[in-house]
Each structure stands twice: as C-alpha cells, then as structure tokens.
Length: 269
Image (cartoon, rainbow, N blue to C red; front, side, top):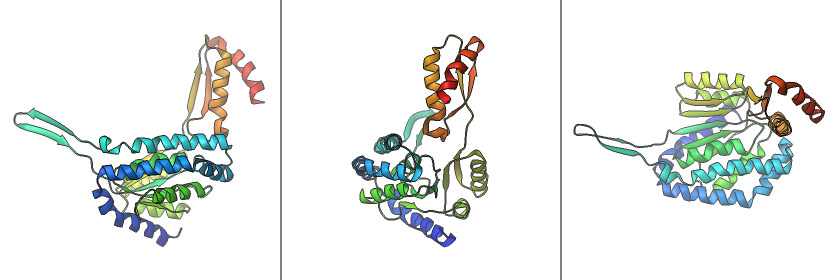
C-alpha cells in the first residue's frame, strides 16, 4: 500500500469511530456472535488459506484458528467486561466510580507465522470495545486476514470499523507516525518490536509490542525422561519452531543431562 492508501484506511477508521463507539455494547456483541459463527462455518476454507500461503499442515492451521476463535468468543461477552466500578464512601462524603471508554483508532501489525490467530488476538477485542481498527498483516500470507475481514463485514461490521492494508516498512512507518492513530499493537521479532515501540511512543501512541523470547525448559534429576523428551520435542519444534513461545534452551539439572541427550538426539535426527 502507498502512503495515500494507508492514509485512506486510517481516515476510514477515524470516520467510523464516532458512530461505532456510540453503538451500545450489546449491539457490538451481536456482531461478534455472528462473526464467531461465520468463522466456525468457514474454518476449513480459512485453514486452507493458511496452509497454502504459510505452509502449515491443515491440522495445525485449524488449531491456530481455534485458538483465535477463543478470543472472538471472549469478545462476545463484552457488555459485562466493559462494566465500570463504583465504590461508596471511599472518603467522607466521597464516592468513586470508573468507566471504560474506547481508545480510538487502533493499529495491529502481525507476523507471518500465525496469520489467523494473531490478528484474532487483536481486532475482535478492540472493535468489541468500541474502537476502530487498521490491520497490517504480513505481506507473506495476507489472504487469511483479508478473508477474516470479509467475514466481519458479513457479520454486520460497519464500513471503516475494520480495515486491512498490505505493505512493507513504508506502510508501517505511516501507521506509526500518523496523528490520527491512537494505539498500536505489534507481534514479531525483537528488533522490530523495539523499533515499533520507540517510534509509536515517540509519536504519542499507546503501544504494546511483543518480541521474541528465550524460553527455557528445566529438566530435574527425578523427571520422567520419556515424558520430558516428548515435551521438549513438541515445545521446540512445533510450528517448525516459528513461534515466540518455542523452547530454545533445555537446562538439564544434575544426572538428568546425559540420559536426556541420549533420548533427544535420535528424535532430533
């Protein structure tokens, strides 16, 4: 997407914000219920999109969609989740109350490894809370996020509430610096997460940026080594290791070290 096209997506989200944020939560929840049903009805098609572009097996693709669907299901309960609090007499003749209001125009920048699950972590909750959203998925597998946006529209999502754009760093920089964007959510590599956080924060936006991790698995001397080996293989090599929660270090304590290596090496080979 060009700068002007990214700007059009932001403008659409900004234009839709007053009406959508004023829509009663119960009405927004009804859209989410329909969206949930449409994902369930089309899960095989969505899984095929994920598999064909990313390369996951169909079972892995369906599993990742199911994980994302759980967030949509959670968003269906938004009328209760948005309730504020009231406390009487926090001080003499002083009551205290809180209300929850939308942040505004939100941006999601998502990686290639889970093209359904990670977008579904982000935009369903954001729009259910009354925000509008611009999603910038990975250019490596964009078809699934686009299909999800079509289903959201079919579920009754108004124009401009959810917008999907494709692009590279130029598009990202526009999203991070545009004054109409209020919040940014990112999942990806640590160097890019640091860049996104610093750039968006410097431009006055709320930011959450999830980078990579160094995940450790500790194997104690009294561990069941067959079970530990199975757990390590799944945790390290699931999704070909392309996930932020993949185990990259196994700490073998005491006498467990060599027996664990003996069991692990043939499995890896």
